Image (cartoon, rainbow, N blue to C red; front, side):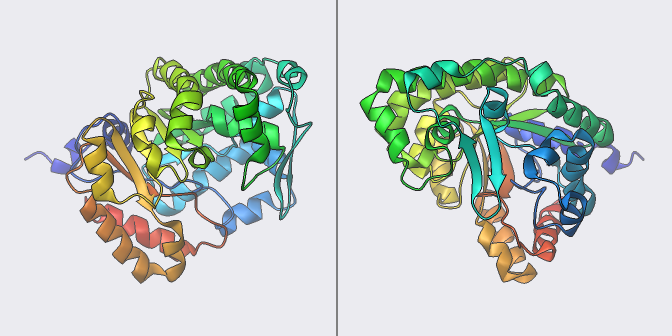
Length: 350
Protein backbone atom coordinates (compact mmCIF):
# COMPACT_ATOMS: atom_id res chain seq x y z
CA UNK A 1 0.00 0.00 0.00
CA UNK A 2 1.18 3.54 -0.70
CA UNK A 3 2.55 5.49 2.21
CA UNK A 4 0.06 8.36 2.90
CA UNK A 5 2.92 10.58 4.06
CA UNK A 6 4.39 10.50 0.56
CA UNK A 7 1.33 12.32 -0.77
CA UNK A 8 1.43 15.05 1.87
CA UNK A 9 2.26 18.52 0.55
CA UNK A 10 5.66 19.92 1.45
CA UNK A 11 5.83 22.86 3.86
CA UNK A 12 6.59 25.08 0.84
CA UNK A 13 3.52 23.87 -1.04
CA UNK A 14 1.34 24.15 2.06
CA UNK A 15 2.45 27.74 2.68
CA UNK A 16 1.95 29.01 -0.87
CA UNK A 17 -1.41 27.23 -1.18
CA UNK A 18 -2.64 28.79 2.07
CA UNK A 19 -1.71 32.27 0.85
CA UNK A 20 -3.68 31.60 -2.31
CA UNK A 21 -6.76 30.89 -0.18
CA UNK A 22 -6.73 27.12 -0.37
CA UNK A 23 -7.92 25.21 2.67
CA UNK A 24 -5.28 23.07 4.37
CA UNK A 25 -5.67 20.07 6.65
CA UNK A 26 -3.49 22.03 9.07
CA UNK A 27 -2.11 25.55 8.68
CA UNK A 28 1.48 26.42 7.83
CA UNK A 29 3.36 28.86 10.02
CA UNK A 30 6.29 31.19 10.51
CA UNK A 31 7.00 34.20 12.74
CA UNK A 32 7.88 37.77 11.93
CA UNK A 33 11.44 38.50 13.12
CA UNK A 34 12.02 34.79 13.61
CA UNK A 35 15.67 35.39 12.72
CA UNK A 36 16.94 37.67 15.43
CA UNK A 37 18.11 38.67 18.84
CA UNK A 38 16.20 36.09 20.87
CA UNK A 39 18.36 33.29 19.45
CA UNK A 40 21.72 32.57 21.11
CA UNK A 41 23.17 31.43 17.78
CA UNK A 42 22.15 34.77 16.24
CA UNK A 43 23.94 36.68 18.99
CA UNK A 44 27.03 34.54 18.57
CA UNK A 45 27.18 34.81 14.78
CA UNK A 46 26.54 38.55 14.65
CA UNK A 47 28.54 39.73 17.67
CA UNK A 48 30.48 42.91 16.98
CA UNK A 49 28.94 43.44 13.54
CA UNK A 50 26.86 46.61 12.95
CA UNK A 51 23.35 45.79 11.78
CA UNK A 52 23.61 47.07 8.21
CA UNK A 53 26.95 45.30 7.87
CA UNK A 54 25.22 42.03 8.78
CA UNK A 55 22.53 42.71 6.18
CA UNK A 56 25.13 43.36 3.45
CA UNK A 57 27.13 40.22 4.26
CA UNK A 58 25.31 37.59 2.17
CA UNK A 59 26.98 34.62 3.80
CA UNK A 60 26.11 35.84 7.29
CA UNK A 61 22.59 36.95 6.32
CA UNK A 62 21.87 33.55 4.80
CA UNK A 63 23.08 31.87 7.98
CA UNK A 64 20.88 34.12 10.14
CA UNK A 65 17.90 33.41 7.88
CA UNK A 66 18.36 29.65 8.23
CA UNK A 67 19.01 29.49 11.99
CA UNK A 68 15.35 29.39 13.12
CA UNK A 69 14.47 26.89 10.40
CA UNK A 70 17.11 24.48 11.69
CA UNK A 71 16.01 24.91 15.27
CA UNK A 72 12.19 25.02 14.95
CA UNK A 73 11.26 23.79 11.45
CA UNK A 74 9.06 26.68 10.34
CA UNK A 75 7.32 26.20 7.00
CA UNK A 76 8.87 29.37 5.60
CA UNK A 77 12.09 31.30 6.05
CA UNK A 78 11.96 35.11 5.90
CA UNK A 79 15.14 36.61 4.51
CA UNK A 80 17.29 38.47 7.03
CA UNK A 81 17.22 42.06 5.81
CA UNK A 82 15.51 45.34 6.67
CA UNK A 83 12.86 47.64 5.21
CA UNK A 84 15.42 50.49 5.22
CA UNK A 85 17.68 48.84 2.64
CA UNK A 86 15.93 50.69 -0.25
CA UNK A 87 16.30 54.16 1.35
CA UNK A 88 20.00 53.45 1.77
CA UNK A 89 20.20 52.51 -1.91
CA UNK A 90 18.46 55.80 -2.75
CA UNK A 91 21.24 57.86 -1.19
CA UNK A 92 20.14 58.14 2.45
CA UNK A 93 22.60 57.34 5.23
CA UNK A 94 21.00 54.67 7.42
CA UNK A 95 22.53 53.85 10.80
CA UNK A 96 21.20 51.60 13.55
CA UNK A 97 22.05 53.07 16.94
CA UNK A 98 22.01 50.79 19.98
CA UNK A 99 19.06 51.57 22.28
CA UNK A 100 17.77 54.17 19.79
CA UNK A 101 17.04 52.31 16.58
CA UNK A 102 17.40 53.49 12.98
CA UNK A 103 18.60 57.01 12.20
CA UNK A 104 18.27 58.32 8.63
CA UNK A 105 20.21 61.32 7.37
CA UNK A 106 19.44 63.71 5.85
CA UNK A 107 15.69 63.60 6.53
CA UNK A 108 13.44 64.18 3.53
CA UNK A 109 11.24 67.18 4.35
CA UNK A 110 10.97 69.34 1.26
CA UNK A 111 10.57 69.08 -2.49
CA UNK A 112 14.30 69.29 -3.16
CA UNK A 113 14.99 66.37 -0.82
CA UNK A 114 12.21 64.28 -2.35
CA UNK A 115 13.60 64.87 -5.85
CA UNK A 116 17.13 64.14 -4.71
CA UNK A 117 16.19 60.54 -3.92
CA UNK A 118 17.91 58.60 -6.64
CA UNK A 119 16.47 55.60 -8.47
CA UNK A 120 18.54 52.45 -8.11
CA UNK A 121 19.12 49.22 -9.96
CA UNK A 122 18.45 46.50 -7.36
CA UNK A 123 20.66 44.04 -9.21
CA UNK A 124 23.61 46.36 -8.56
CA UNK A 125 22.78 48.45 -5.49
CA UNK A 126 21.25 45.58 -3.49
CA UNK A 127 23.02 42.63 -5.08
CA UNK A 128 23.92 41.39 -1.58
CA UNK A 129 20.24 40.69 -0.91
CA UNK A 130 19.87 38.75 -4.15
CA UNK A 131 22.89 36.67 -3.20
CA UNK A 132 21.46 36.03 0.29
CA UNK A 133 18.21 34.83 -1.24
CA UNK A 134 20.01 32.54 -3.69
CA UNK A 135 22.05 31.01 -0.88
CA UNK A 136 18.97 30.41 1.25
CA UNK A 137 16.99 29.05 -1.69
CA UNK A 138 19.74 26.54 -2.37
CA UNK A 139 19.82 25.46 1.28
CA UNK A 140 16.04 25.15 1.57
CA UNK A 141 15.66 23.29 -1.73
CA UNK A 142 12.07 22.51 -2.61
CA UNK A 143 11.06 21.64 0.94
CA UNK A 144 10.44 25.03 2.55
CA UNK A 145 9.24 28.42 1.36
CA UNK A 146 11.25 31.63 1.25
CA UNK A 147 9.73 35.07 1.93
CA UNK A 148 11.05 38.38 0.62
CA UNK A 149 9.78 41.75 1.77
CA UNK A 150 9.86 45.52 1.71
CA UNK A 151 8.37 48.42 3.63
CA UNK A 152 5.07 49.88 2.49
CA UNK A 153 5.06 53.32 0.85
CA UNK A 154 3.65 55.07 3.94
CA UNK A 155 6.04 53.48 6.43
CA UNK A 156 9.09 54.02 4.23
CA UNK A 157 8.07 57.64 3.63
CA UNK A 158 7.58 58.11 7.38
CA UNK A 159 11.10 56.93 8.16
CA UNK A 160 12.50 59.26 5.51
CA UNK A 161 10.57 62.27 6.78
CA UNK A 162 11.01 61.68 10.51
CA UNK A 163 14.63 60.58 10.21
CA UNK A 164 13.96 57.93 12.87
CA UNK A 165 11.15 56.02 14.54
CA UNK A 166 8.30 58.12 15.85
CA UNK A 167 5.26 57.83 18.11
CA UNK A 168 3.32 60.85 16.88
CA UNK A 169 4.51 61.21 13.24
CA UNK A 170 4.04 64.97 13.40
CA UNK A 171 6.47 65.69 10.56
CA UNK A 172 5.00 62.96 8.38
CA UNK A 173 1.46 64.12 8.96
CA UNK A 174 2.49 67.72 8.48
CA UNK A 175 3.59 66.88 4.94
CA UNK A 176 0.63 64.58 4.31
CA UNK A 177 -1.95 67.22 5.33
CA UNK A 178 -0.04 70.40 4.52
CA UNK A 179 1.68 69.38 1.29
CA UNK A 180 -0.41 66.48 -0.03
CA UNK A 181 0.99 66.71 -3.57
CA UNK A 182 4.55 66.42 -2.26
CA UNK A 183 3.66 63.50 0.01
CA UNK A 184 2.00 61.86 -3.00
CA UNK A 185 5.14 62.41 -5.08
CA UNK A 186 7.33 60.88 -2.36
CA UNK A 187 5.21 57.73 -2.17
CA UNK A 188 5.14 57.46 -5.96
CA UNK A 189 8.93 57.65 -6.13
CA UNK A 190 9.19 54.97 -3.48
CA UNK A 191 6.84 52.62 -5.33
CA UNK A 192 8.88 53.17 -8.51
CA UNK A 193 11.92 51.92 -6.58
CA UNK A 194 10.27 49.20 -4.50
CA UNK A 195 8.60 47.46 -7.44
CA UNK A 196 11.86 46.39 -9.14
CA UNK A 197 13.35 45.65 -5.72
CA UNK A 198 10.60 43.09 -5.02
CA UNK A 199 10.90 41.66 -8.54
CA UNK A 200 14.61 41.09 -7.90
CA UNK A 201 13.76 39.12 -4.76
CA UNK A 202 11.40 36.84 -6.67
CA UNK A 203 14.01 36.28 -9.38
CA UNK A 204 16.48 35.30 -6.64
CA UNK A 205 14.15 32.68 -5.17
CA UNK A 206 11.40 34.24 -3.03
CA UNK A 207 8.11 32.26 -3.05
CA UNK A 208 6.05 35.05 -1.48
CA UNK A 209 6.42 38.71 -0.59
CA UNK A 210 5.30 40.62 2.49
CA UNK A 211 4.80 44.39 2.51
CA UNK A 212 5.25 45.83 6.00
CA UNK A 213 3.25 48.94 6.83
CA UNK A 214 4.65 49.10 10.33
CA UNK A 215 3.27 52.60 10.95
CA UNK A 216 0.08 52.33 8.87
CA UNK A 217 -2.08 52.17 11.98
CA UNK A 218 -1.13 55.78 12.76
CA UNK A 219 -3.61 56.94 10.11
CA UNK A 220 -7.38 56.91 10.27
CA UNK A 221 -9.21 54.76 7.76
CA UNK A 222 -10.42 57.58 5.50
CA UNK A 223 -6.99 59.20 5.25
CA UNK A 224 -5.29 55.89 4.59
CA UNK A 225 -7.77 55.03 1.82
CA UNK A 226 -7.37 58.42 0.19
CA UNK A 227 -3.67 59.14 0.57
CA UNK A 228 -1.95 55.77 0.87
CA UNK A 229 -4.05 53.02 -0.70
CA UNK A 230 -3.47 54.06 -4.35
CA UNK A 231 0.28 53.70 -3.88
CA UNK A 232 0.01 50.47 -1.93
CA UNK A 233 -2.29 49.08 -4.62
CA UNK A 234 0.23 49.87 -7.34
CA UNK A 235 3.01 48.21 -5.37
CA UNK A 236 0.90 45.10 -4.69
CA UNK A 237 -0.12 44.83 -8.36
CA UNK A 238 3.48 44.99 -9.51
CA UNK A 239 4.53 42.36 -6.98
CA UNK A 240 1.68 40.00 -7.90
CA UNK A 241 2.70 40.34 -11.56
CA UNK A 242 5.85 38.47 -10.57
CA UNK A 243 3.67 35.40 -10.03
CA UNK A 244 3.92 35.06 -6.26
CA UNK A 245 1.35 35.73 -3.50
CA UNK A 246 1.60 39.03 -1.65
CA UNK A 247 0.90 39.60 2.06
CA UNK A 248 0.17 43.05 3.49
CA UNK A 249 0.73 43.80 7.18
CA UNK A 250 -0.21 46.97 9.06
CA UNK A 251 0.69 47.18 12.73
CA UNK A 252 -2.24 48.58 14.69
CA UNK A 253 -4.32 48.24 11.56
CA UNK A 254 -7.54 46.59 12.76
CA UNK A 255 -9.54 49.59 11.51
CA UNK A 256 -7.82 49.28 8.12
CA UNK A 257 -8.67 45.65 7.39
CA UNK A 258 -11.16 46.31 4.59
CA UNK A 259 -8.92 49.01 3.09
CA UNK A 260 -5.94 46.66 3.05
CA UNK A 261 -8.01 44.02 1.30
CA UNK A 262 -8.83 46.63 -1.35
CA UNK A 263 -5.12 46.77 -2.23
CA UNK A 264 -5.51 43.54 -4.20
CA UNK A 265 -3.24 41.55 -1.89
CA UNK A 266 -3.55 37.78 -1.49
CA UNK A 267 -3.35 37.84 2.30
CA UNK A 268 -3.61 40.27 5.20
CA UNK A 269 -1.42 39.70 8.22
CA UNK A 270 -3.33 40.62 11.39
CA UNK A 271 -1.84 42.11 14.50
CA UNK A 272 -2.91 40.75 17.89
CA UNK A 273 -5.55 43.42 18.46
CA UNK A 274 -7.93 41.89 15.91
CA UNK A 275 -10.24 39.12 17.12
CA UNK A 276 -10.07 36.09 14.79
CA UNK A 277 -13.86 35.79 14.55
CA UNK A 278 -14.11 39.45 13.62
CA UNK A 279 -11.38 39.17 11.00
CA UNK A 280 -13.02 36.12 9.45
CA UNK A 281 -16.40 37.81 9.28
CA UNK A 282 -15.05 41.04 7.84
CA UNK A 283 -12.79 39.37 5.26
CA UNK A 284 -15.53 36.94 4.17
CA UNK A 285 -13.05 34.85 2.21
CA UNK A 286 -11.79 37.75 0.07
CA UNK A 287 -8.20 37.20 1.23
CA UNK A 288 -6.20 34.69 3.19
CA UNK A 289 -5.45 35.65 6.79
CA UNK A 290 -2.17 35.46 8.69
CA UNK A 291 -1.53 35.94 12.39
CA UNK A 292 -2.08 36.85 15.10
CA UNK A 293 -0.61 35.59 18.35
CA UNK A 294 0.40 38.33 20.78
CA UNK A 295 4.21 37.96 20.86
CA UNK A 296 4.36 38.88 24.55
CA UNK A 297 2.44 35.68 25.38
CA UNK A 298 5.67 33.79 24.74
CA UNK A 299 7.27 35.49 27.75
CA UNK A 300 4.78 33.60 29.96
CA UNK A 301 6.59 30.36 29.14
CA UNK A 302 5.99 27.17 27.12
CA UNK A 303 2.78 26.02 28.81
CA UNK A 304 1.07 29.39 28.39
CA UNK A 305 2.32 29.51 24.82
CA UNK A 306 0.92 26.07 24.00
CA UNK A 307 -2.46 27.08 25.42
CA UNK A 308 -2.53 30.36 23.50
CA UNK A 309 -1.51 28.75 20.21
CA UNK A 310 -4.11 26.00 20.63
CA UNK A 311 -6.83 28.59 21.25
CA UNK A 312 -5.72 30.65 18.25
CA UNK A 313 -5.64 27.65 15.90
CA UNK A 314 -9.09 26.62 17.07
CA UNK A 315 -10.44 30.10 16.35
CA UNK A 316 -9.06 30.04 12.81
CA UNK A 317 -10.12 26.43 12.18
CA UNK A 318 -11.87 26.12 8.84
CA UNK A 319 -10.64 29.48 7.56
CA UNK A 320 -9.87 29.08 3.84
CA UNK A 321 -6.30 30.23 3.57
CA UNK A 322 -4.73 30.70 7.00
CA UNK A 323 -1.08 31.04 8.05
CA UNK A 324 -0.05 30.94 11.70
CA UNK A 325 2.13 33.85 12.84
CA UNK A 326 2.63 36.32 15.63
CA UNK A 327 0.75 39.63 15.50
CA UNK A 328 4.00 41.61 15.57
CA UNK A 329 7.66 40.68 15.37
CA UNK A 330 9.32 38.52 17.99
CA UNK A 331 10.90 40.63 20.72
CA UNK A 332 14.48 40.42 22.03
CA UNK A 333 14.55 38.18 25.04
CA UNK A 334 11.69 35.97 23.85
CA UNK A 335 12.23 32.57 25.49
CA UNK A 336 13.55 30.09 22.95
CA UNK A 337 11.62 27.29 24.63
CA UNK A 338 8.35 29.19 24.07
CA UNK A 339 9.02 29.50 20.34
CA UNK A 340 9.74 25.78 20.30
CA UNK A 341 6.46 25.11 22.14
CA UNK A 342 4.53 27.19 19.62
CA UNK A 343 5.77 25.18 16.66
CA UNK A 344 5.48 21.86 18.45
CA UNK A 345 1.81 22.74 19.00
CA UNK A 346 1.37 23.74 15.36
CA UNK A 347 3.08 20.62 14.00
CA UNK A 348 1.04 18.37 16.28
CA UNK A 349 -2.00 19.32 14.20
CA UNK A 350 -0.59 17.57 11.15
